[in-house]
Amino acid sequence: MSERKIVRFVLIFIVPMLLTACGTYTKPPSMPPAIAPRLALVVNSISNSISSYTVDPRTGQLNAKETLTTGGTNPRVMALAPSGRFAYVGNLDSNNISVFAIDTNTGHLSAQGSPVTAGSGPRFIVIGPMGNVLYAVNQQANNITAFSINSGTGALSPLMGTIPTDDAPVELRFHPSGQFAYLANFNSSDLTVYRVDSSGALGLLGAVPAGLSPSAIGIHSSGKFAYVASLASNEITTFSIDETSGALTALEPRATAKDGPNSITMDWQGRFAYVTNAVASNISVFAIDVATGALTLRSTVSAGSIPVSLTLDASGRFAYVANLGSNDVSTFAVDANTGDLTPVGAPVKAGTGPVWLTLVK
Image 1 (cartoon, one colour):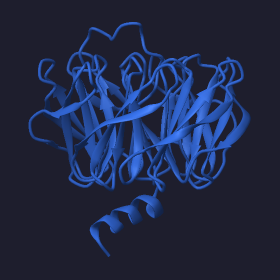
Image 2 (tube, helix red, strand yellow):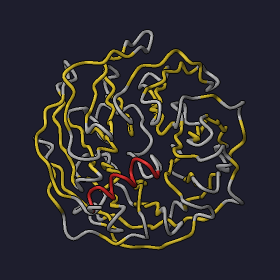
Image 3 (spheres, helix red, strand yellow):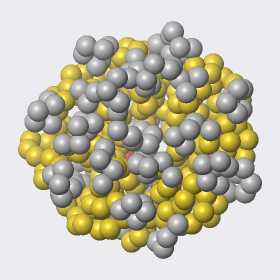
């Protein structure tokens, strides 16, 4: 079997567990935050660890700081509390969530007690629009569990009963209004739409087809469009969003990515979309028509082996890509006018199997 076929087999059949995307989505401000990130935290799925780096605010380059274990098995994703004082890691195979405090002076991470039990296979975790509820998307149990967040200690407490999903849920994203949530389901090839009430409870509104094996979903900063990467068909589907009902309508034509698209990230202004292509080991850069939502391919840039997530810094000046196959992180400078990516220095070594990168201010 060729190397390309092996990578595709791993991505489609062993997970969507190797699929991941950018960090927690929040409504963008009118201007990018002035504070540059001071820390980058990389989740390593195979070595069960977090690699910590300081960030050079001028060049965007990463400098290794420390490595610590997550306390769980096969960590896939990290969510950061709005305060920046706590980080949460979803451990897929040990069915739990690790809680870490972040020292605001030194940037050191310290585990806060034992990991908290989640559902079976917490493939994705995300903090809700109000910043006080954490949702765990349990891929193997086909449900979502929710936890309240103690703002003082970072502790998690179960909030409500489990929320059923369709088959193999992989990613949950919120509308900028905070009223709706959208869930990509890998095996059932659809999106489920939920209304979010003031308590954080999710009420099912319906489902729509979403291409073959949807692996990631992104919501445009305007709240008018949603974008779904379909790993098996190498497509990006654009949906218009009814801002009153939250309903989705698929728009044509669909954009074509390279081989194995598995994450989608947009800049804070909603002008560009970045898609990591895990099988092709590159990144597709799309321009977004802010009026129609249409995607136009601008460029393609090489990444490391099996890139699985891309994170933009808040200013939009730099992009970081976690490369699962080459065990490193690539840094790119972002052209403010075109959105194009230019490599900055050599890739930085991470632990084994890096899948996620979070920036801390």
